[in-house]
Length: 396
Image 1 (cartoon, rainbow, N blue to C red):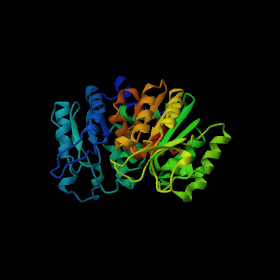
Image 2: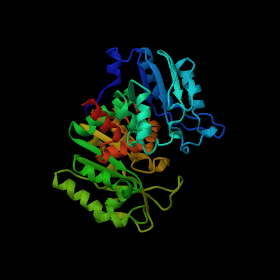
Image 3: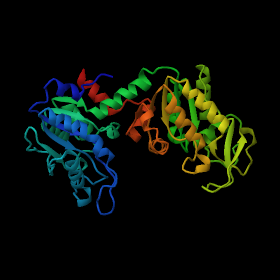
């Protein structure tokens, strides 16, 4: 994937004395009093900002926060708490600037935070008038917000079209490199784990991956629909019987390429969806009519673990059972540990997946942890993200 790296511009001295506009993802959770409750995204934005400051640039940073109404400022939409936290992390004053579209006063070596970009009229729909103004604010645009890479908005796409130079910041560049390594030029065998409650929300991902992967492991409610497609009974488990035809088509597409979708051989069942419900391990052929399948069984988990350990590349999206309940976490735990022990390059993404990685303490053993939920899923669907497309175009 061809694109200009901001780190290269800084190393070459091209950012010195220049006006640099960084689109970061500072959309952090806050409590009712407006206090930031979790600052991972702010901390993740620091390397790009520090890189620009160290290079002697005049630095402007912006982000969206929440879902404000364009043109209608409300105090709760303000990036003021973010400016305060960013200042603490950088050990310097961070000035917050409102109404900045028509011009910003910022000197080389200085850093300003530009108020919530989604307050600007025309941001969401990427209006050309706004894009033109944004491009005039800077000499170098830096996209460093992978979480917004699937949206073509004013500060994610329009400015990349109109700025003199458009580049990828360290966070976005790392995502682009990892995605390219996992999907464009993967070391084989390439195994994907796609789990979740519904096939319908991930059908396009399953169809896209079926054309590319050597093994497709399904889990959660998705696996139940695939079990139905394989002719197995699933009791009263969560599934989508109307999508059995689509599941069969995915199995057939994989089979035609000499690849497979492993169907669970054993499962962990309960009579109720509850943390204290007694768990029973059963063969996949022996599920009763009043059973709920809440995890894959130990035999299935061990077989999948072997497959993962023998992989060249692993893409992981979703836990394979109700891992929040101790009685139904074994499948996800075994898979997480197999990924940690595998010599494969692994890329993981999605909120529940990140929660499982944190629960089993394998952060350091996953090759790359993607920060963008929706953007990560669109990449798995085989879509070209707007941010990637425009940065590649501007690098040409």
